[in-house]
Length: 426
Image 1 (tube, rainbow, N blue to C red):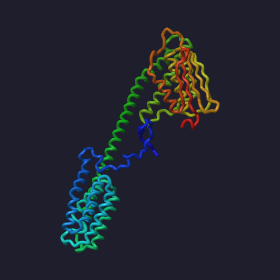
Image 2: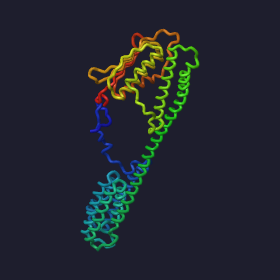
Image 3: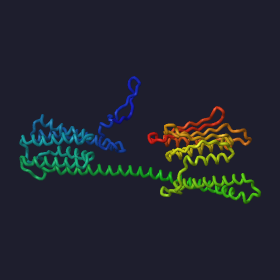
Image 4: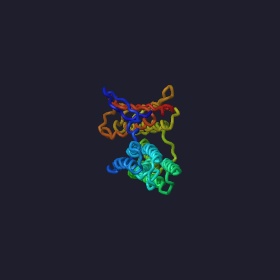
């Protein structure tokens, strides 16, 4: 059984309470969902007025006009009027009682001699109460139930017509006609309110979707602006690096190779940025059909970092891993090496990839030693911390674990355990 909520026990312990609480078991009153208080109280007020007005009137009419026994008249009056209060919350159950009491009253009137001018089988006060009950039924029950109620009313009305003491006439069907009108009116009001409620819900959903679409469009716009700004500077770097050997005289071979590496790295960054931007611009625009980086591309990251002036030892891994795991490992190493370049330039770094003996997990380990004493200091004194957050998100995405933190000797360690089996992914 689904559980909801907690209640404080007498001795301070918490215990769970089943969701089938009193609030769910207790039916809601008619118009309980109205925004105005007087509308919510209206059904109770109408039911109370009908009870107070019809109870003594029914007793008086049945005894004085129809000549029914006082005790029987009182019992019938209570059965025909008191359930009107119940109709505010349970109109169908109230109908069972009132309908049976009205039919019993009609049969009881056959035992007395009353004037032909008086209505039979249902006196006026019974019609008034029954019409109010039918209106409550229409506001609560579905079409099928309302149709069955009207058919039962019409059937009883027609059946009693065969034993009418003074012959049958059109006025004897007054209860069937007025009850049907009340059922139809109440059902129409209920369905209209249901349609309005669904429209409000749909408008709320549409508003949320519009807000979400606006947010996505704004993100795409920011991404395009970011691309324009960064792409311009990266393009300048690429052009300058490519043309350096033509602009500078007698360039040493190692310097020419360094500029070539800078240009290649800049072009690769621009290509990856364009692919990401293509995904943001349009779901149907898949960008360039280039595979996502994985374990085999980590060696290129290590080489690029080594060219930036640091010593990097790399222990590769040739195992076949899921694409998501390979991409996560690549991004973790990429961010870890970028942090080394920014915060500990020149520090010796060790990168290793290994698969556990049982083949269940891939271990990604990036450790850098303390940075050498450089006059310029680190490239970035502070940071946003988004890199570590991104690492944790990628590890969490594949169901792995991440351990990062400084080492006692002043270095830094990044260790990730990424599952390789389907069981671990779930």
